[in-house]
Amino acid sequence: MSSASRGDMNFADQLADKLKELHHGIKTEMVESVDIDDEWFNNI
Image (cartoon, rainbow, N blue to C red; front, side, top):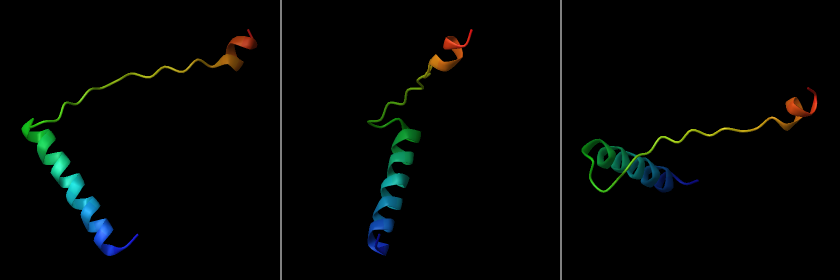
């Protein structure tokens, strides 16, 4: 990755963080993810 690309990505991350902080055009959502351990159930 070139320096310009890293700089662009850093700017994009900072912009997204600022928009999130100010609640401008960005919604955040926390989602719980549950995975079933089939192997555990197969051994009981």
